[in-house]
Length: 119
Image (cartoon, rainbow, N blue to C red; front, side):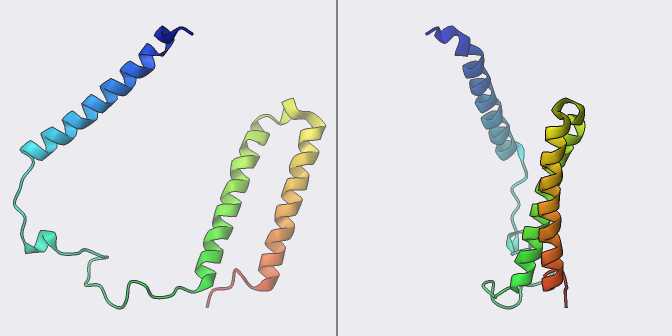
């Protein structure tokens, strides 16, 4: 096995590490160091925190987030197919249509169950 092939990768890792550490060191050396009570205070949305940080959220919040991720992933699968639609032919078209039908049935199910209704 010829290890000389991996020298550019090793060099890239070393240079990246040195540059990253150098930038952090220079920033900490020449950066301003004037902490006060205002800078050290907790910041959350521009006003003082209220309530318990461990309060319970409605499960619909997570459901909407999961649905967003689901349809985002759907688009991530449809774009490559759209670009290569001529190359994959009829088999690719049928496969994507089955995929879209399953997702559409799931979306209709979620809609009928009221998962998309927000009160």
